[in-house]
Length: 199
Image 1 (cartoon, rainbow, N blue to C red):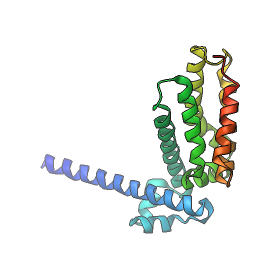
Image 2: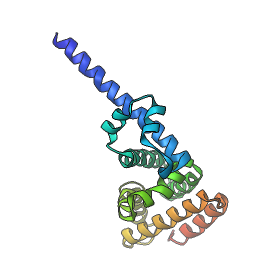
Image 3: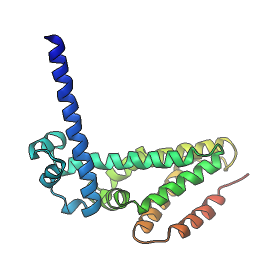
Image 4: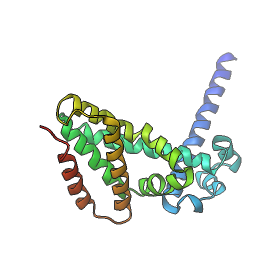
């Protein structure tokens, strides 16, 4: 009997997680394609094959679903940047590859619409910046700290440098998202980063 109860509880937990994953996937698809203001939570639920009540149970509101989708997009972007950086042993090449991967993400519809366009408007600048600092800005600061410790860039306070580079890359990724030339952006990035090197 106890085993049957545990099995049922596990099955329910798996069903809840499957529902949540379906809502996140469909939410990401719709937010990326249509933008936050044109998405209706009940339509996301219907397209995901779940009830409107299930959508509200998991996320409370469209804004709640958006925050969860945004966190997923940031995680996916972080993984993409880390994968690009870890192709190299050299710390400098890791920085360049990670920055290039971040800029290239500006062509991804989910990153463009959800992360770069809607997130600052929907969440407000302060919340959006706080989320950015928890993810990509933190990784950038870690990379710059390692470069400084290795003497590849000048010993300097890392926080203002990380914020400056993060802001420049967010703006450039948004410029690419709105039709800017990714190759020109990469060239500008290389020139900007080259100015930091001491070795």
